[in-house]
Picture 1 (tube, rainbow, N blue to C red):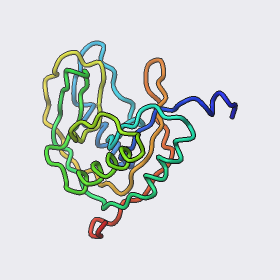
Picture 2: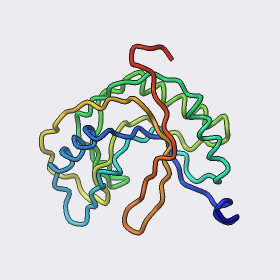
Picture 3: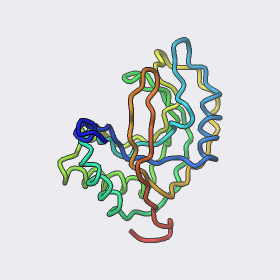
Length: 185
């Protein structure tokens, strides 16, 4: 790696990454919605649920992010994806959960706290668990019935985001297991 690339930053976030079965269910939900002209469907390999957006960090700081991931001990959980959503401010169509499991709220809070402790905190918005289905959606679509499904969270990941000309390319940098749902953190 050249000195220039070592000194440059990388865009990162912590996320739940779906297994293949969950990825297929998200894709099936996305396929039911007509988003209109100009909408850009998210490729199925990019489906995820963001836990904490970190943003641009210097490559040497990736070690800090990996340490945060290694140190976090949190229980796994099951998330029920049961609604579509349209967010006009960001022009996205999402598959979302109406109810937030306590374990998801806990990992979200603990990740944000750890990031703040390392001066890596971003503006912490409220937790809105979702998978983005399409971008550049300029008006709310007509909603079909949502095929409700469960997303079983068994691990979380640190993900690198490289902005391409038409789509972002996401690369899992590292992953860590969540504890068995019946275990205590």
